[in-house]
Length: 115
Length: 281
Image (cartoon, helix red, strand yellow):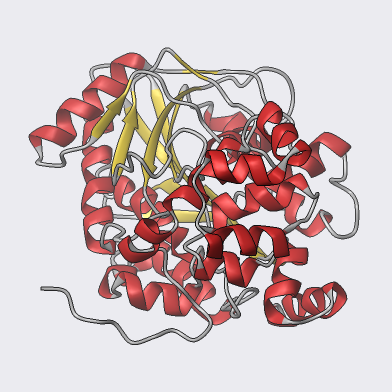
């Protein structure tokens, strides 16, 4: 018997529920390990998403390049990072987007955590 | 019998691979991180291990979510790195240590850890970067046995279970009929969170307490549930499980370890980084 755990604010553990919801999306992002697949995605994004059977929520989040929406659609951080890599976005870009900060603000927050 | 000489820990972040490739070790942003490694290289140069058992987590290179083992042990003659999709250079293959792989596999199953065995296994930055940081020049002089612990898809193994598994790996190393010297390595952590509105979460106080516990009170972190560890260290900070396995392995070699070196730096990428040397006393 598993009990619901207290919610950690701003945190979505990638559990069975997320894994079920996000399988197609994460599978597409896993394919981005290959250069040829990254190129194919860029040349026809819609066709590539159809090939992997993304649902409308997932496809909309991909079109929006919106990480919080991608997580809500079942995306896993490591696979989403492969998607972000296509656009040369690093972890501070992604962190800034999710926290509503500029990249400089986000980096300052990280530095402050070390003080 | 083989000799278990000590344990090493380091963070792994894809960007480190980029920094090595671009020669940024003396760059002001990177220097506090890379400065953590000369003392480790000195210790390795003196002790000269033949084999490294690497506790790490794969990030979607070898294992996709179609098949996600909780514990997986490599049993390959060599381990290839490959394109991970985030633009870091691919490193040359690393040599395996088949006899030790199978001795660990046999020992773990005998001790009721029902692991997955991998005769082919791609290794990602989490396995390759520590080796590159420890031995930056030329070919890697050690053979490797990768032990992958799932920190990607929940449910993750409990900290107490990881500790028990790590201890069993240590017992396997100690009972390996070989004259070789073995070091155990932890790759991961410390506190960080990549995803969600809490992205950028770092917990310095907890990290420092955890590092201290590794020396004097190795089971300390096993009191926490995975959920508590995520809350205290972030969704990816839970990679501290790798450190716990490494430390547990050392308990098979003796009751005490000596901490010879610690480096702790915030931040590299979104991560609180650490590097550590524990010698079996």
